[in-house]
Length: 627
Image (tube, rainbow, N blue to C red; front, side, top):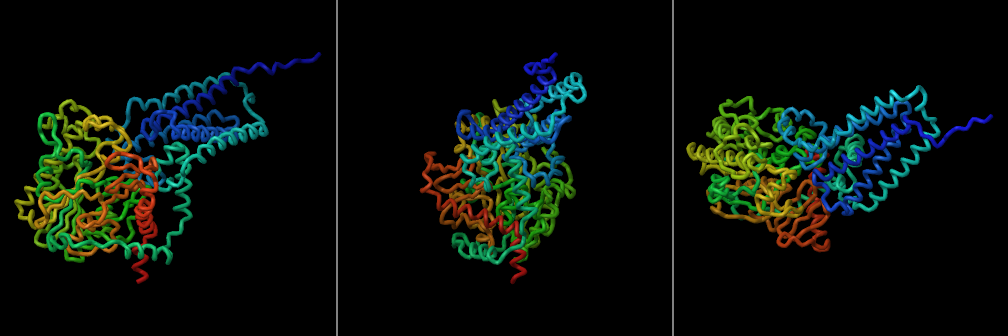
């Protein structure tokens, strides 16, 4: 008698396990899709080639992950799926929150700065949204699935022979690799070294993390950190061929004090703008601009270091590093800096910030930059609490008290009150009517920046009261964006604009003004520039040389441009977005042909290469040793 086996019948545990794998795969794709579009890295219509390549690449990565689990695990393969899902969920949630704040996904160097999390806890919490629950919806079902399968299963039933697992894994891996390769071959990878978001937009966030780990290992674990003779020649030739400053306003501030104020999240769109009731958002800055030179095409150029990157740009005229931040990665490097230049001129140099001295590793970094004294929150009396800590008005007043004004000084002040997320108790009933925006993100920001402006007005009055106003070169600028891209809809409605990558890029300006007797009052300079240009501009006004500044003197520049850390470039005529690999005419928004800008673009982007070479190889220290 023959026993017939029914091969057509699939057991219940097998069906449940199959459903488990498919459920994991479905939510993997759903979470990836949600991340790409909630961050606006990818946009509608969904049928755009960019989106299709991203989805194809993500699907390929999914199959590769499944193939690895299938091969590496047998009895505990479903538990491995759950752990994998949990880890990937934590990573993509972290990416989402980080991107909403920094416009970038998390990289390995960023993880080295994990100690900052405690200090920015309020900002992180404010970036969570109810709809983000989609990231964890699958977890209860996966746990329930594990319990069900354990009850249904009999010992040994789920063990799969190694040859069968190997064949299945190879098939899945081959299919995944082929899917990824199709997407990869259709993407211009030449921009990858310059813009992380370009990688994520075209090939997905999961591939990016593999790409980032591989790059980090190559650049840090196996990199040669010594400066070669040919690299030193490249740096020297670059600075030798760089256009020197002109004669406009040269030396008019020689011997005067220097006070630089970096205002937290001060963006240009608030300048000279009124609310519906007629009140100016920044009345004190608007008034001060009429007594100063104002730069109305001034862009922030930060990377992952945010406020600290703005400080670094201003004081060294070098670009921030692409990954992480200079303050953490290279705090012992040798830099030519604004405080060092001024110390050579007999100045005392001070830096003030009412935050923890360890935040952004400032205590260590300021020594490398050459500041004589750093005053942190430990040195101030907390007599006014606004936002993150000491209010700007008290901060400015107390900072001036700490300066020895009997000798020339350079004071660098970094404000704090208008720090993201702006929704602080102090501003709940703050006396500034924001109309329909009351209770909204943008409404809180406008209140915060109105307070920051009021504090600047008090700073100016203090300078006058102390007879410092006319004996000081005063520089005020914003450090970085105020409105994350996630809130772009609110800003666009407020400004009466329609969103596009082009319009959004044009808004990434910060105010910059320079006030000193001898400068033309009310002069507006529309030459395109950025924070990297402040050291050479100040050097010209104060009559000293800054031979290793990458930036240009904005009062003498023959052409205007700003190179951004993601390799986008703004000039007086066009804006190139590395995220789309296209350039747009600034006046009309017309997409330009590459022939119209490609050669100039490469020349300008070379500044990023020179800056990275200087920082990563500690080139200035090596060059000093070789003298």
